[in-house]
Length: 152
Image (cartoon, rainbow, N blue to C red; front, side):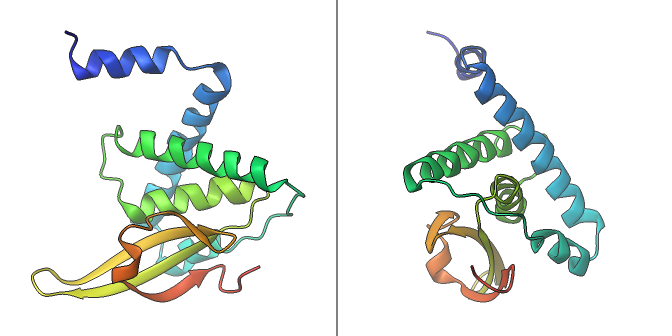
């Protein structure tokens, strides 16, 4: 029986070119999002999240496949980077990848009071009124802001 690392490496090597490129993009965008969160003032990071891109006419089924593939790439990369990538980094990365493709997405920023840990924050991403990343935890949080602040 092979170990989990060699199985993961085998699966990675079996990926086709477009999937490898998407993983590369996700890694770069995840790194950029992590640096932005760590180094830039929150206001500047918000400006990055709120940039509007021209929207393309994409069929719902195709849009769903694009969203799923981008989410997959961000999730795969976020578990393998040597830094801590949590909901804020993952959400910003997915948000930027989708908007780059002309898919309108909304980044939600929320908070909740935890009896043990105190004030906690969470970020989740929505597309077309559906939560596509971070949705399992989202109901426990009160949404403070959305980026962009207007929903399309």
